[in-house]
Image (cartoon, rainbow, N blue to C red; front, side, top):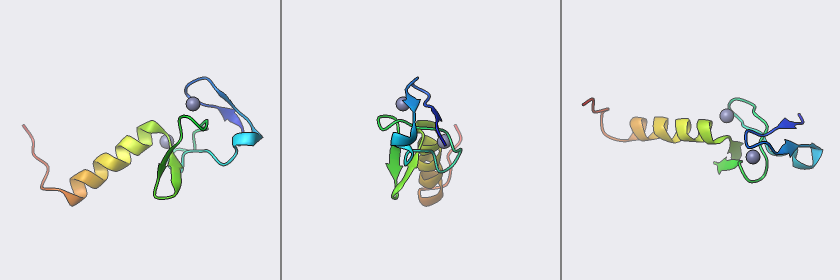
Length: 63
Ligand SMILES: [Zn+2]
Ligand SMILES: [Zn+2]
């Protein structure tokens, strides 16, 4: 689905393969972050990595 990336780049059919798997946001080739053969926006990628860190790491430590 064509749209506009968060950085302001117009995302047309040429970049149709780039889109966040999580929130569905349009992503240009520069902003798309590849994780496990899927593309995510920076926000969802950070969310995903953070979740994974918490799950696989030691118990969450509150200050
Ligand atoms: Zn996203
Ligand atoms: Zn972008």
